[in-house]
Image (cartoon, rainbow, N blue to C red; front, side, top):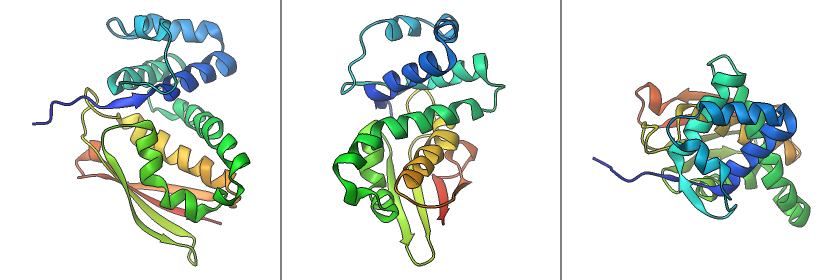
Length: 196
């Protein structure tokens, strides 16, 4: 039995907070804090370092509480947050390294991109077919929100982050379908990606 609790990079927490405060409003951020479980609000009220690692259950609780406050329980409310995080993190990289603005580079970098945000689990590139403009990514991680990234992350945040990254790299339309989910009994989360 794995007892290790995964960690998420501080930048995710900060960018999530920034999105909520700047796009939805400070009053909503305060409402989210007031509804967080346990003493989670204390964590979000202290200084969070962008490059430090923090327990991932805090992120899951933030996402779940945000969806309860703003969304309707289906986690679609976090899609704009994932898009915001991708733009904030990839925008400066693309400005400096123009040659990275390539779908193949983004997809082949999926393992290192995952480990940039989470220290548990891994993403494997099962395939990248530039002729067919398709790819398959697989996320291997525990299906336990008390130790690893939660269902909202695998179902909505991961696909939206990669979709945004691919669109920023200059592709046309992007569709990402999650065909397997570790929270629905599968061994992993599998994503089938097509771009135009």
